[in-house]
Length: 150
Image (cartoon, rainbow, N blue to C red; front, side):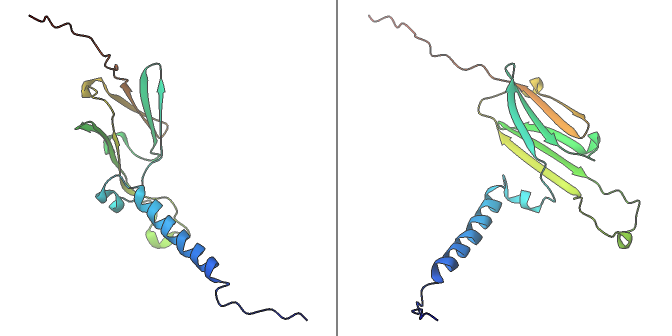
């Protein structure tokens, strides 16, 4: 049997790592929120944003959400997706063995870098995916102005 020297700070580094992990997880969770009231939303649909043929496309997964329960709004250069997935009340709550699907309101907001005419934005829902398309704004090109000097 070997003699091990007692080190009172031996487990301190493991404790510090655990504390750091807790703080990182709490910061990442709160950093995801676009607005303060989003934390009150029941769920947040995942989105893909990409550019194709000079059109910006936002695809959001919203299975089970009806077209009339979704709104797409633009205000102050912020594109907002709002809606609600309503529960299907075909079974009484006490008759469930397991319920994992989330119901309730959702809200996602995206800041657009450049001004886009709201009338040029279109949206459609198919197979549980909301697709919002908006034209990519033309970049302002620097221009030279000749000034006549007297």
